[in-house]
Image (cartoon, rainbow, N blue to C red; front, side):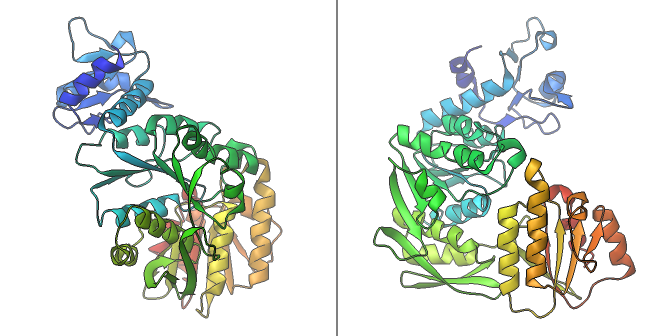
Length: 429
């Protein structure tokens, strides 16, 4: 079946599922494959549960005369092509967003601001990959005036693939940093891949919102129509802001407005300014922009402040890379709290740079002189660190230590790659 025929079916059944355990009545089930599963094997079960159609790509799972089983060459490709077709058909204005750090928070802030004036569709959670992006696009309807689509990548070429599906009218790269070096090969590889969003906009006469203070972004933005924001005063800026305090929540000034956010970390100033800039460009009133920024509360273990009976916790355990780790430690050092403790987990997917980057983090910890430091994971264990720094093989060892002797009276930064599962420590502290 070709995409046009499939799209005609989608218009009659505009609900997509890829999980045979969750099959809404009248939906279309796409039989995706993974390392440990083959969705084709569950297509018939999805039909029995109420799917109107199931899209498969293996002939052995087809049934003679069963027109509800739609055979395509490749299910994932069909899903992506269907999303592109729908995006083109609906024609909603789309802002594409990518970056090494802060893209999810920035996406949430942009959506919060734009929702003050428009009907907005935006990526939920971090569904920003080759499956999540098309599934988000297929939720578009004619009532949506703007969509904010987050795009993630850990290998070269992924942003190019996603932008060709999303076809963004506008784009923003939050920043470029040292993450997924195992997949990208180098920091230059990160810059090139994130820059694929600029490449699409350049070819399609699109517009980019750019942090004017970021030299890496400036270097790859030639030939683009740019809408600029930043902290350093410049006549070309649409939005300029300055940090007032971070004690622990970010407070800043932009234009004539003072904004008291619920965000921890001075590094979030750039994210907030990006949202203010985009809101201003799309004619959202300043007062509404400010209210949206002040009203946004972070979730999903991204720089969340939690106050327990014994400690104050800064939980930033969703992800970690050298750039975000340094930013978190810099901000933590500036917080005025007295007794400070760090519980840090390994930074994953750094490849050959792993040993060097983990040692740099240790050097920063030694320089900043926090009262207590716990290190979780084998990469940190291999570093040269003071004997006062405690090391744990994994989160379970750390949990056992807390049960024996719980730290008390500290402000504790908890940060590591999601796979280290440090978030499990928060409930014990």
